[in-house]
Length: 312
Ligand code: C5P
Image (cartoon, rainbow, N blue to C red; front, side, top):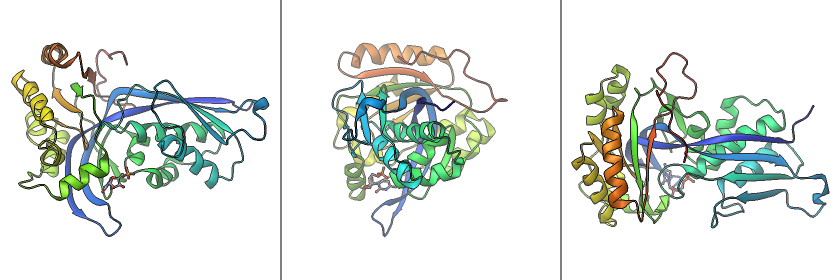
């Protein structure tokens, strides 16, 4: 029996460290980063358009619970659906229902997560059985973070961010995230980086060693994001948020991606709860404050988070 609808989750990520190591001839920047999936996701349902849709119905229709989300090729999920059908010579009309919970333009790869979920869903819906490597090649054409979002977990990414290597998963940890009420465009953040001074670069190798050894001190000491030097001077509130998290006992707090979401990581739930409650009280009336755990979707032998938090 053929399928008419497939739903996939697209998970948000945080950058445990992010370095920019150079500029490239194609206008992109060379990056060196460690990414981690967290328990926050969008749901993308790809359905064949109903038979009565008619010949004039668009090939791709986007429906989304959140207003203001583009419904055309500016949406990475739209791009993913179009690319998939082009490459596979599929002549169909599809409807993408995107149930969005990941904040937009937030440094959490929400758009890339939706594109990745769309590619996975279409591969199932059309029974194309493409290997993950092929989906990741397509993903790289859509956006630099899409290949990572296809596999998720703890990964080391280089190149534009599209060369992804899975590393030993992070030990269990709790994340408190604060997402302010404005977005930062990625190209703008890269521009700001280009003119930033006194940039402190992370030691990615040391971070990877820390993760491999499950050495919490080694991990937290080497988490750093070069975008902080670029965007903190323009958005002073972000530095305040980070410093408040550190004041409340977070062993480490930093910007994720090109921002503006700031997060802190904890090795235990009690300290995370304390910081979460403070941040919620202080910033919660205006900003989105969340508490999550890391997410390891595939590793059987690794310790799973003990009590998965709701995806509210
Ligand atoms: O690949 P993606 O579409 O996510 O990139 C968005 C923009 O961010 C690019 O057009 C570029 O300006 C910037 N970028 C960059 N170097 C990267 C990734 C993105 O300069 N490695």
